[in-house]
Image 1: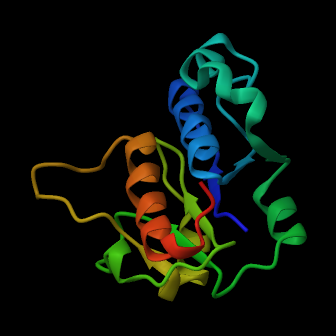
Image 2: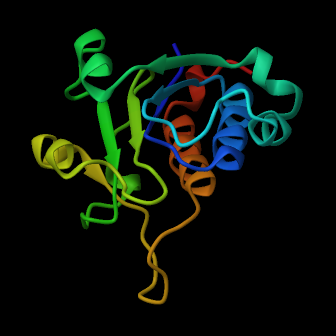
Image 3: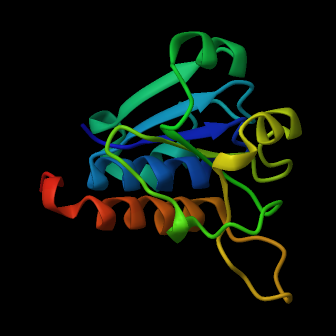
Length: 155
């Protein structure tokens, strides 16, 4: 079983396309939580995902409540945010885990971060930067999760 990347209200089609391509190459599923700031059939999404988009294990949810109603979330989830001090590499990732990322403009909603506070993770950065590009962030965390589980990773 692969990992699950969850994008909460993504806003930039190029990022989502690149993340879709990442998911195909990493054997991960991509979950998009509406509202989405663009039409997922947009040229920019397809261009960034190239010919990978058709191979993507894509799940689109009408809302965050819809997602939580259909997926049991607890110890199997990690919530990426700049609002914690716990680095992602101190998390114990297991196959099948859900790795959440918020929108490029607002991040993961505060009420979700608070509910799963012990599951919040961050990518360490210098004081010079405020955040990383969403596609880069997903790649950093997803490939550490794969590294931790490489003996069972299907290539």
